[in-house]
Amino acid sequence: MFHSDRHRSSRDLSSVDDPGPPPVPPQRDECCGRACDPCIWTYHHRAMQRWKERVALWQASRGHDPFAPRT
Image (cartoon, rainbow, N blue to C red):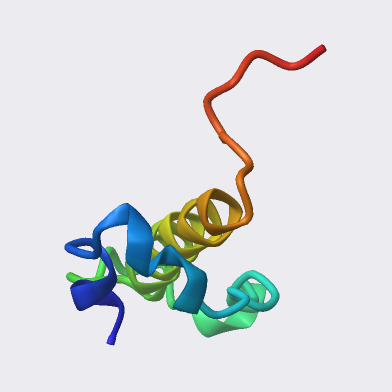
């Protein structure tokens, strides 16, 4: 799925899907606080990283450079 998107050439970016909304963070009571490995927050962090990568690909497919300086 997304893993293959990393290897797309610029001509293939037109088929990048909308990334959708960001992952919902866990509720406070979903973490037990016992330093589990991995913790539910670790899963959320990884999901956020993947979502941010999809957003960057989606923006690039529409000609937006996420690293361009803001004016």
